[in-house]
Amino acid sequence: MKKPSHVLANRSFLYLWIGESISELGGAIGALCNSLWLYELTGSKSAMGTLWLTYFIPSLLVQLFIGPMIDRVSRKHVMLSSQVIRSMIFFSPVILMFSGHMEIWSLFVIQAILGILQPLYVPAASALLPTIAAENQLTQMNAWMDGTVRTMSFLAPTIGGIVAAYLGTSSTYIVVGMLFLLSAISLFYLKEPMLKQQEQKIPWLKQVLVGYRYFFKQKQLIWLGFFTSLVQFSVGVTMVINVPYVLEELKGTSFTYGLFMGGFPLGYVVGSFLVGKWGSKGVQRYMMLSGLLMGGLSFLLLGFVEFIPLAILCEFLGGVCFPFFNVHQTTLYQKTIPTELMGQIFSVRLFLIRVTMPLGVLFAGQVVDLSGIRLLYMIIGSLIIIPALFALTLPFFSFLNEEKKEFPNM
Image (cartoon, rainbow, N blue to C red; front, side, top):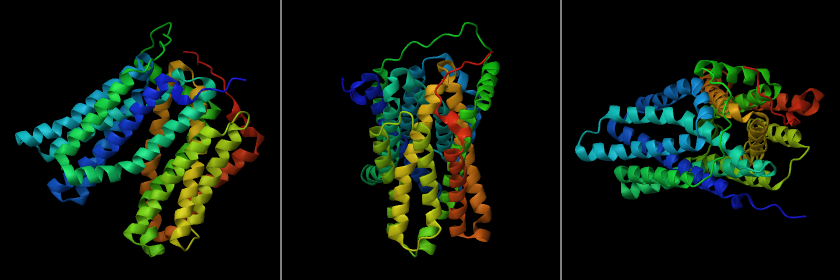
């Protein structure tokens, strides 16, 4: 029997993977650059929060209705255009600095434009992947992409800090602009199959509603969205409590906090590698939900551990487990959603992810003083573990193994 070729032997996937890797690195360094420059200009902590609101609010508004565009035009061209515009956006502060016209409002405009581009680029990338992948390699390709994103988000702050320290902010902006151009060049060389054209032109608003109706009528998508929302809500909670947990509960230092925060992404890279290596035929549901269950358990255990090494180990093991959920649920989306609705459905999914994380932040900020940090870890761990246990044991959830595509009636 012929051994299947490595995923990187697929040239289109290779170019997509390279383009995504460079893009993630550039985006993370660019975000660091904007934050550093704003703080240099204002010295205000509240301005930092406003900067991120300027990013998220336009992004969420665009996310609500942009899906049909991703299904009507070339996804490759959507990604290419996004990268070129991002490149120009990061070159613009350099021009403004040298001309003496750099103002605080300029950074907020840049951040708003970046927020608008994100809901175009991310769903387009997710919808493009299954069109260039062999079905038996889709899980491995998702694992490669997911692991790369985590690796770059882990490395980028360190790399960006070093570059900014040695080259200065303006030169770092040039580096980021060049990275996005390199990403665009890589994406240019991938070959995208021709999109299937719809027999009749559907009005934009109607297609948006068709996408949302399709999402909320499919048991698979509803439950996967529910599980993903629980995870993102929990991540939002940890954004509030991780620092006081390490510094106050565990009596740690800034150094040990850095080790604690590095445990999860390091484990995630390992987990992504394992997902890509281990087959899942016939057991996708169990691998996916077991990863969710064990990831929730890692949150729960943080409520009990007393020593920093054990806390770091919990974070590492959580990082190993969560890719089994994330990669398999992304693959399930790609295998069950009609190609004609792929962009719209991934837009709905991304909207759910981006809404529930801030809700977790707000929830933790309101109750942490009343409940305590350890109890919050136990709560979010239980929020994930209990539904995962039901989904693993009840026959009702057997539909999570189905892989059929049904296009809805218009």
